[in-house]
Length: 184
Image (cartoon, rainbow, N blue to C red; front, top):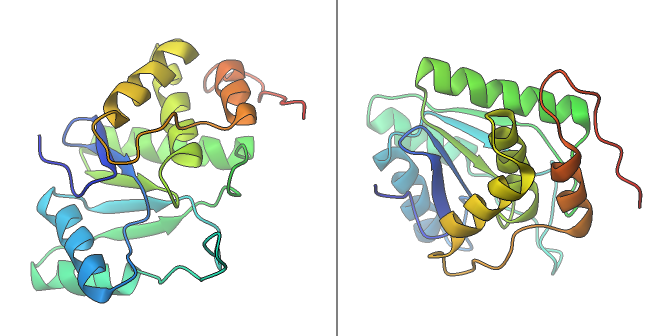
């Protein structure tokens, strides 16, 4: 199945896709990525980045939501964008994670193709995807191995988790469990 752009992958084919920030340093590069999302049928974007987040070099990320809305309108469709922030290189607040996972579940039930992203698509995004897979019956290690396989063909496919994120995923027990406690 076609992916929207390099650095993205399907974790429920045709319905749930994940990857990195769909903006770019240039308007042309950004538009290629946004059109790729639309070409793949994406109708909802869940952004895990914090408002005002900047690159490691300190440059702010260019918002893409307005441009995505314009490109979608040109095709006669609408794409909903929602920010559910998780601090970079950290674990999610359990309440925020619960909201994200519930939105992914609703997207599956309603068959709404959804794109989930953070900056690089490695840590925060992979943590959420892994917890989603755990809730669907995989062990934490099976979930992380699946993500590693899906990311293998990507240009920047290194193992996607920080140490605390691995601990968090291994401690995640699903929707009715107590939130995991990660010791630093």
